Image (tube, rainbow, N blue to C red; front, side):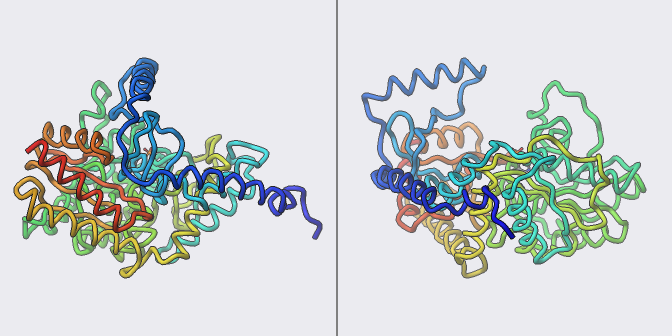
Length: 459
Ligand SMILES: Cc1ncc(COP(=O)(O)O)c(C=O)c1O
């Protein structure tokens, strides 16, 4: 078979050398970011002006005074004011291999040389095919998932999931979802999201039936949630299109639940032929397996699954029976060529380099991070730091009794002191960390020192 010019370009040693040269240049600059560093006094005013202008342009100030300079090193990132911060939120979970990762950058550069910037569902290039094939192969290892459809973000992947469920269960419209769920920002996903402050002024559609999340302090939690699901189904028999849940809740508070919590509900959905849609937009790649449904051992129940963030683009997986009919889902964009190429590389790195499994790097990072938080909670930050928990690279802790104002203040103090994280939770407010899989033990020690200093500064 004759080679195409596209393959020749992909294999060109000249292009590979140019990419290697570019990476060497980036690597040299990146290596100088040795660790956390305060702003350069000469750049402070410049950064402030940028931030003020950006706030005016978008009509709302930035949450943190953050504008990246375009370079980082692993868990560290440089900002426009010349400061270097330990980034433990990663754009709310996108950069799972941290900043300026050479293999990710090389893949993005290869993608950037393609003939089109954004690929679409009508005219995909090779990256679309290779990414789809790899991610589906990973999804189908421990589930019945057979097809994947790409989209540009988690919300859009979720919209596609819901449409597939509704088409399958037509004319059913009601959705079983958990308390404190987060599903995205479109009109429909804002409805599934259990946070009224995210839909102020929007009409209510009353299409979501709530089930309480697992409560580890309540011995009857599993029984209660299953009972409430059954009551909803009895009341809305034949009008339920799906049961959707995050295997570990993100925005709702980094709430974890054991396998035993889900099983009775999943068995009941199976009995009632209610499609099960697992939202792994935040959990994908983070819990010690690619999918949290693998970590929880519930893959066989999954009919539809969604991912985004770490994948660098959105994707919806379907079993054969749930594959929607032509016309239901499409859309112009499926992802940028650079993002699809980088996404594929990230999947390969995480698949081949001992990140996954109970003895993999992700679990080791989890154990070290939790140990650090526990030690602080028992010693220098006693009484101010409680309940460190999570799964894999998703970790949260409750500072200052979970009082919103205090936790927000702490998040900003941490930022100022060089550590970027975020908050989550309803009622009890928590600090959340989306830890990059490239963090080192030394970085975790640094994180501990900054957390200790910031808490003591506010206590
Ligand atoms: C569980 C979950 N679902 C959906 C979304 C929405 O994804 P996106 O912001 O990419 O649209 C998020 C984003 O945080 C999420 O955590």
